[in-house]
Image (cartoon, rainbow, N blue to C red):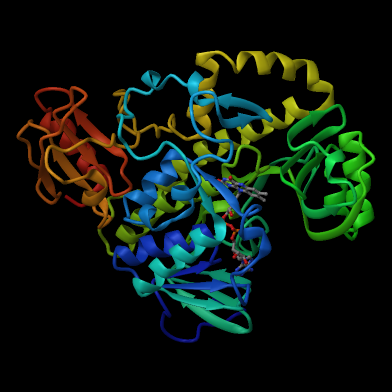
Length: 496
Ligand SMILES: Cc1cc2nc3c(=O)[nH]c(=O)nc-3n(C[C@H](O)[C@H](O)[C@H](O)COP(=O)(O)OP(=O)(O)OC[C@H]3O[C@@H](n4cnc5c(N)ncnc54)[C@H](O)[C@@H]3O)c2cc1C
């Protein structure tokens, strides 16, 4: 290793750059599996007005709710208990949107999701970024993770044995580095990850303002011939201005006059701003790294993929990365990983990320001013059960499935939340981050893998399931188990 120079031994098993939600969740996963972790975070303090309500609101998909539930964390979050849906409750209320086009609870046909059992964990929930990060930080600290704030990663080098990092003028060495340092990831740039995709169509604005005449600007989401604006609460406005991302990339100051001019153009009103309190811009640039791993350096979350926040999927994608990576990296560190396990991280997560990027691109295309006629057609389609169910399934991550090479439709999906005859729940069984063989009457065992015999109310016709530590089904039996296929699946995921 050149340049930075090796200072001696390793500081920790894993260095994580970035204490955002993805870095913190991953740190907890690794620590739960017995790894030592040091998180290096650029910001001196975690607080930001963009992390608290209303700007800090985040929609959690079913996979994120399940991930949190399976680690005993979902219950600790409070916002979803107070606020189920900002649009209200009931069949006729809005459940989400695609390109600003709402879909409603009453139009969603849950029978089309045969592996989601009624009474299971919520299919989606709301969270506040500040609350989520604080809870994940608390969990990480309680598991022994060291979080070093005010240290921006500046430089990375790696050789066959280690990664050496320079952050805030200090050096750190570890066998592994994971870049969870967000959209402008220094890890990604330092390590030469190829980051490919499409350029932006618009500049997005998130602002908190005061109006001279608040009645002039209609509330809610409004798609117009000039772009889109969304007033969630009086004075809290998001806008999309189709300028090809020019303003965001210009570096020009974000002044009250500029925000007023854009808002007037988008809304077709003569609205006048008297104060600008919070203002930030973003774009729909959509890029993804071509490889999630470069030797001893891996990426997760926004560091690996960026796209517009339309439909709220970035956080969910990142938590999904961390849930997938944590147990695989931990097994690799402990010498317990079957051959090639760590490389399945890229193989499984890259296609999921690519789908989300295309989902956000499709929304942008439909929101462009010239697509307004198409927008009207989609608005009609969204009132049909099939369209609403399809879109809800994509937005809430219900349809996510990894291709594990087994044609059974449940293999590669999240395990159904079976209702046990006793007090046990699957989430409790998965809390320690270990996989298991769930025996629903097949009378099958697997040396080296925890065996849980259980009686559940609805087996979905299954007699046994092999479940990975991330809650993904690796093998199932519908009737008499095929022990040789069970063994094949087991050696792929576990050290058996
Ligand atoms: C307006 C808006 C609304 C959104 N709504 C939703 C939603 O409803 N649902 C959803 O799923 N997603 C949503 N998202 C996206 C979501 O917020 C992000 O995808 C998510 O925060 C990514 O988490 P992360 O941990 O990967 O990155 P970040 O949250 O960006 O965290 C990265 C961390 O790394 C730190 N860092 C940066 N550089 C360095 C460095 N050099 N060294 C050390 N540390 C560094 C940063 O300070 C930060 O703490 C929204 C985004 C926006 C902008």
